[in-house]
Length: 382
Image (cartoon, rainbow, N blue to C red; front, top):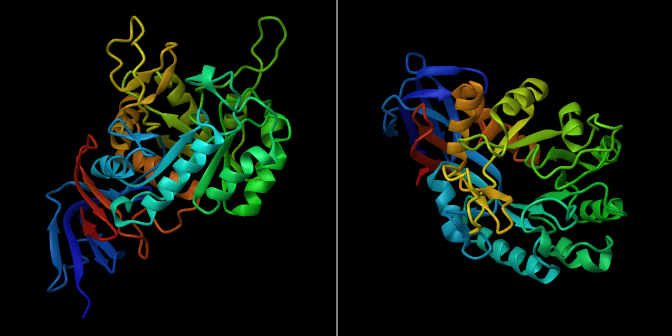
């Protein structure tokens, strides 16, 4: 007889509603039943976890994080992945930035592949390749970007081959010459890979031309993007407008407590335009030791590089959810969608991201402020 785990006395966070006083049953690492306690009794012999009235939602899915706890994934994947797991990210995707050269990319990919094959980094779900072919005019550390030459197979082939089956997202600037050759070669190695427009000043038409090839994400939306050409003082159209306009494209948002990455008004506007099923919250967790610019001394959730540019965040995804609730009035149901269901769907994780029968029992218990009380990974409390 199979042993079941029963989580009782929980508020179940579904995709579009709550189930108060709920029960959820887990068997063999998967969700096998859920409902309110009057209709779903706890089975005899089940291992019982009393949620104490906390919210039970799907584990968070952070598809874009360079570090965990200030440690780069490529340097110490165990420490970085455990930091995110502790804060509710039962799936995390290490991001590798285009400040690395080809050799460094391949070395980092190999380190992370080995980590994924161990039980120590069980929540690493794949890679987010933030590069190599972005626009070097935008983003942190842009004075040291090695990828400013032409898009050339001889340069990128070793890293595309190394990351072949574990890179789920490749970020790129669609305006780079011959970028379609790169896209086709990536898809040749991994037909399920998707693309993100990032660090770019591409026109909407250059972006839309890549949608049929799998471009479906706007990397840290409204950050590190240019403004298209316009007449006189009129605003042109560029990346942000294309991401807002195209239904096929998810908008990644970094939501810090002061609204520096994305102004709170802009967060509300993007939510209104894109709709709740096209928003993805990310941490973009990074580590940089540049001086804090004057006036930003209270910006404790973000980093700066040595030129004064924003360089990612110090966030974990549960805190980003809390900030999104504060800035936009989103409910706890909404932020679980932004930080679990939507990112899982965007990058092809079909086995997680929601409370549904047959899905992986990647679960977290949180209070209303998204403080994580318990993490359950594949049915096992961590």
